[in-house]
Length: 355
Image 1 (cartoon, rainbow, N blue to C red):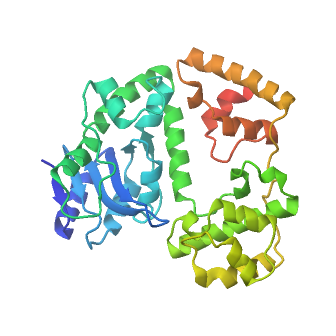
Image 2 (image 1 turned 30 degrees about the vertical axis):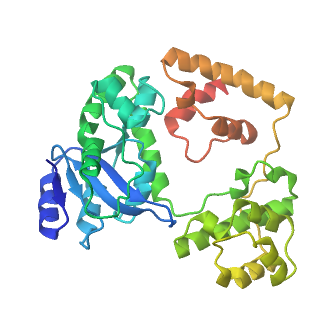
Image 3 (image 1 turned 180 degrees about the vertical axis):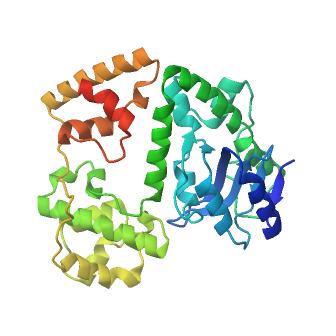
């Protein structure tokens, strides 16, 4: 049976036990329905076996736990991106290293983007019950099914890690996985707002450059407001409303209210502030780039030609082509001549000769 930790003394005893561990298998449960920032509900750690379940809703001093995670030589997690964001409130800085078993399985040729349950079944021949992903992890006490699910989520991570490392070392790809882990840790720790947010709109290229700049700045305003109020982005403003406001600035508060009339959650107290923002002269962000136009026939031919080369390389490596590069990253590279900021060195080095 797993240890349930919701008092300071047992937490300190656990941290002392884990301080010398060469690696920590880790998973979290969190809620992110009505908030911008995830609410951490539970943390599962292994060792000890089968798990320690840390009740992160308890009013404890979490600084020592955050320090332990930051100082750990290696964290072992599965599909860790969202968990890392949820953990930001705990640790003073990112961990030293991360081994993501989902990414490792992709790069080892076991399977691309496999769920934890499928990976455990495929590599360890263990069938796990269907998950409790829709559970309310904030309520207490947790049900027996929730506790079993939480334990299982870290029970097999160390075995998966050992099996995957053996395979990756034989293939000479362990460094790839660790570079991806470094990328994920850096990304999760970033506080800067992403550049060129307007590129998320497929039809942004149809706007004038001035309108595109306004849309990018408006999306920055929405992001800052969502963070400060701790609300989901679309509760501040739906994507369509942002596009319409960038397309045509409302003349007055009444016109702005008309555009936002279908917004159920817009913070009405911020309407005047938003109107002022829209009317004040704004310099575009230094990294602004116009939204790309849809690929023409020549671009599509070039893309398909490179895609064929990448598919052939993936076949030689015995991995899914999607594990090498996504369409988004490849199109960005072809359009700008540069790699996206989150491209790991191994990936750029492997693919650059093809491009």
